[in-house]
Length: 413
Image (cartoon, helix red, strand yellow):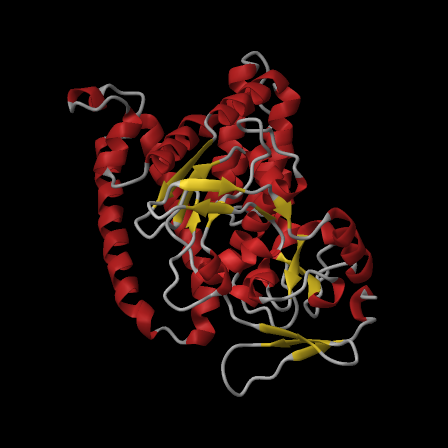
């Protein structure tokens, strides 16, 4: 570029900056019926500016000026001085460096056929293929045709196929590296709640989503949970099912299980009773204790006046094997209206809790999934069996009515 051309470039930058500021001032008052046209045109102008920026960045990256200013790489210099993220800076430099081999793609962007995000993916794929097969020139036509017809997300998939065809070992190595960066941090807060923070590679993430999606579906027209809430409930249900099914590796010679320590007064919900103790968290409410005790193994421990253990009884399963099998056959699924969780994903709920004198027999029990079992205890919904065999679910609060489920609805016997 000559000195005269350089001067003209900066004059046009002044014009572009002034125009951008003017557009910023006018944007709030733009009539809504013209927003669609404005966005498509402005996005194309932005893509053209990104392309010109990339050309300049690619040319400048070939110099050593970044070292003179103490930066470790051209991307590092651009990141700090152009106020960009490292990934965005790397994309622009890569586009500028690959552009000589992508003339058709650059023209397609100039013509508005593809966006800069498409061009960035094409350049990234060209760089990867050229790195794995330096003796074979990259044919942009195939990828460009896909870019014209695809969203950026779909183009990601297509480019991965192109890369795998050119360098299957390289793609496998990248995915193996990604798997090694898997992490999951469990942070317990002061109130005993648990914060989750982590990262999974693509294949692992797809596995987790495949397991959670069926459990995170809306549970009928009355399910007002957000998607995030449903996914959280699905994770809890998945973990609970793993514990109940006994498929997890043993720990200390025992199946992994949730251990609760509580007094009889707490189980009965008496006033002034202490909270229950639960492993890995703070004390829990009597309602939670009662829910967990609905269908569990209970061990009697008698303490002396100074909290010394003086007697330990044998663990007894509240809902025995034969009784549970009969309950499974009768109910066939969660009995909450509209829920279809199968028996293996449910617990035996006592309509009148056994600690309050309720019998552990079929007439006093129904199958409930994790979410609806929680609603029945902590949520304080009431479940009532009517004389004609219907199950009423009565929400907490005045002025609300329950929904009845007949004996033969949803497969119930």
